[in-house]
Length: 485
Ligand code: LFR
Image 1 (cartoon, rainbow, N blue to C red):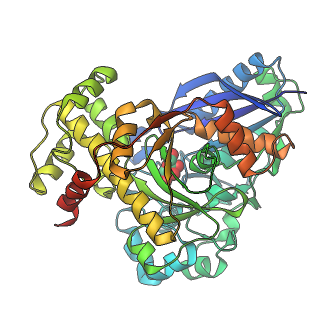
Image 2 (cartoon, rainbow, N blue to C red; image 1 turned 60 degrees about the vertical axis):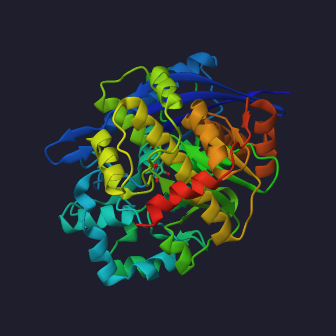
């Protein structure tokens, strides 16, 4: 049987990587070809992505990936964080650096949009959670600032990189579903809504589904990377979370997932969106996944809280920090890890301490105590999201899968099992890259349906199981400290 090589470009908020997946009919192996930092840059006008440096990292990565595979790649797929985009002029040239979703330009914009289309109607039409960074609000801010005057095209970040590699433009659907301009029932643009909000859908390139061909790598890029052509680019779940959910190694249907990294995205895979008012009030989102599925989940601040503290503390040793945290008594103080108040960078240890003080709890002081507070708070938020998702979608589960960077954090995995009162299966760590690779392999006929793909992962990837300990009463009590206010 023949083994194929697929390159997965996976860009996270703090690092990018190019992985090579070797896929056979019953085998799956992933190796890292290249990893590079993604360092957002603060300029006087705000927080920006250094997208040219990311593209350079992608080119270096493709060169390294080719070197791993004798110069031949069967295809390339690209995924990244969601919602952000670049604007192109009539000649296809990039107009400025893409704005970072943590930039402050969307402050107060949602309220203006809601004056036009009430939040409840917006939810009923798009199923998207409220987040200030949804593309709809970013685009409204850009338009009102006159920044769309020369814009002919908008490409979401993975689609922009694919355009530079191939010369072809498209809008991949899973990521498009995070713009708040897609109807999750149909997977089509929400034309009526866009018209009412004065958003020009002509800015977007035609929709692509995961698995669709997305062009071939340009000769200049082949030359620059030493690859032997032709190398096709395949659309994958280009939203990293869509790729990660595709790589949840569940063997049954009654599972919840938490995609961990900078964010924790906790929820369920559904056949149809939940668009009720109760769901909106709970701020659950209905993003689109593979094969018409819905990623029904909540955004939780995730390891961003810890990353920002670690940055503030001058990058201490993480292993030591986690050992200190493990020695701190459990659940002394918790914060609401779903609170958008933690979205912006800066002063994180102070902001966490302030939140504890404001809710009348002991104030954590040492890095170990603050780290413990963060991990307890994340586990608590995981519990709450998974409990509410099951209730709101009427879809009970008996296992929680954790995928992504947080699988390396054994304490977080154990606390999540304890808080949920459910077994946790942790792994794979590089879930987004694996989902990316497998969707390419599937497009080329190497694997079957979603369940096959998950079985292949369950058979080939190292997974760790955590059993719940200690009962969930103390977690319920901790939650009441946050909700009783
Ligand atoms: C995770 C993620 C989330 C999205 C956030 C911002 O990397 O893609 O799913 O809400 O980043 O784009």
